[in-house]
Image (tube, rainbow, N blue to C red):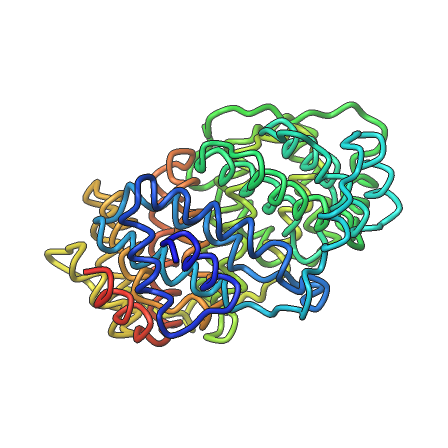
Length: 430
């Protein structure tokens, strides 16, 4: 049996030899790329997506995050992270026969008018089948799906994130046709599931009939102005928050300042997150990173982002963990503090690195810590959050960078799980 056939077999029915076969696949020409392609092709029709509704499993979604973090990691760490993410995807809930077997056998016509009709009528199975008829879906097709679901915040914004991440994953895999159809089909399936436009409609009510567009301009406000917005985002109820937030957009506030305020508020919420909500709260960064990449001009989209940040609880400042003062912060010590579940120490090293002009080193240290954690334990939230931080970092002023990375250091230290799977992968991949 060829290496490719053994890899397909492991994807179909994973065994204790999963990492060994993955290592063999890596040794093949273009083995990494082809191995991930094959995983997407094999797993998308096998996973029981309906059983997870209204949620979504993060095994395949997390693959884009792993590839995004590759530049920040040593090769061994990157391969460890990829191996355990693929292992997570291969072990997610299956059904006895492929969920879309009929759709795979009889492709749709590949027409946008049909696909849009199935999405609007909330028929995800037919949307998947129609998407399989697209000969070679590209970034513009995923983006068009994203536009269709821009004001739909079902499952706290997963639809927009799926369209964005799958477009990027497709590109990083060199846009293979068969894999692209699977990713496009799954994105269409997710978009066609029941919608939730409550927040967008609340924002639209306050925006009225005025033609308002949010320009993408760099951040220009000072710390006091952002702090005022953070207090609104964190402390007000939804009605009062949207009143204040939409008033700022009407007054012409641009995307850069709006994003900075949202990240600062999201970081405060992250500091206040209970241990059991660390991952769910960190999802806010994932959604905000999607906005940073898409740069929407629709004020309703920014309004629902504000509502998402506001959703999570806020505590009193005196109840928060405080960073330990560190005289000589280092990336290695930051990783160790996270793995030792020392949030105050981890925050101190992250804060010191960022203030010393080494935000990228702090991000890399957090990424390294995430490679040691079984993604199944935390639903891949660590991987997704650190990749989101990598996307957000270039768009943020120093104060927001500092707040985000310090909050994520606390979050990762507070959500440590088993590292046994990573050590097993290391032994084989070495």
